[in-house]
Image (cartoon, rainbow, N blue to C red; front, side, top):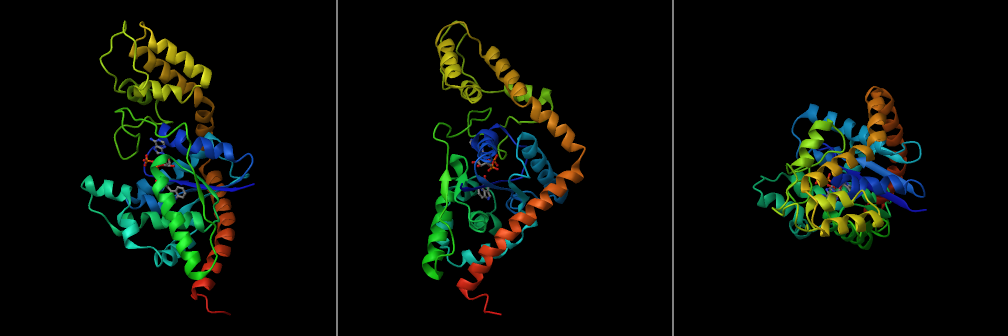
Amino acid sequence: MKRVLSGIQPSGQLHLGNYFGMMKRMIRYQEENDLFCCIVNYHALTSVRDSNVLSENTLQAAIDFIALGMDPEKSTFWIQGDVPQVTELTWLISTVTGVGLMERGTSYKDKLARGLTPNMGLFNYPILMASDILLFGGELVPVGKDQKQHLEMTRDIAQKFNQTFGDVFIIPEPDISKELQMVPGTDGQKMSKSYDNIIPIFGEEKAIKKKVMSIVTDSTQVDEPKDFSAPVFQLLSLFLDEEGIAELKSTASKPGLGFGDVKLSLFETILAEFESARSKREVLMNRKDDVLDMLKMGAQKASDVAEEYLEKARIATGISYGS
Ligand code: ADP
Ligand code: TRP
């Protein structure tokens, strides 16, 4: 039984990229592993600037995750900020982290390239993420491909700390799905909350339909065979098994299929896939106090584990100087 750990930012509506890139696998992992999962609100603070938006998004992300199948009884599910020890460990490990390592961060460099004025939180983002993982002894970390470099940084930081101060941390392994590298957004680029290209998991049916109908397609006519690498086929394939994909591929390779029909079929598939999660979410929306209780229980469980690792790190570094 492995300790599987991951986190998700409450920086906007959860989307199909989040679901297939990380959430679905996390929910499945609960069955046979010791699962740790947090909503990383300290991370989201690097981009969200409105306190009401951040606190509401945080609770909403937790409700959505539970509606999709996260079980706070079986797993340890909490809000990052409810276990503030993570910020203390961030400081301890930042003292063994090279500035050059952070400067090579592609996610950081991308944001600079897009004209963002960086704050230190954004620069230190990968150290806080490393802290999330190391503080709880995470062994396996399910994430999308875009987080690969952050995981490599986490491993580097843990190794450096262990070499410098003695063996304290477990070196985590990334868990990146081989079949699924990147879920495309409506514009064909990586689906991301930071771009205006997401298809939300929840929300108004009308809004989902509008997003699905806006997916980019080429000008291939109904009587021509279609390019199966088009985003709409990639998206629909996410919901199908191997046989279903082969069937869709064969239909696409023959004339007679219109992109409009494929989009409608994707829309209906999305509604069907998340139908029961949608009803569960409705119930949870009216039971926010219960959700908060579940999250407090998760924070307590997480905190117990955090204290153990943190105390080891404090002693190893000499910050704890004995009682
Ligand atoms: P966003 O880019 O929308 O802000 P996050 O950075 O919060 O998403 O990502 C949360 C998790 O979902 C991460 O593990 C990330 O790798 C995964 N993820 C996000 N977008 C995609 C995508 N388009 N394809 C695959 N995985 C994704
Ligand atoms: N950086 C991750 C993302 O943007 C979120 C994250 C924060 C995370 N802490 C983590 C992922 C710990 C895995 C483990 O998606």
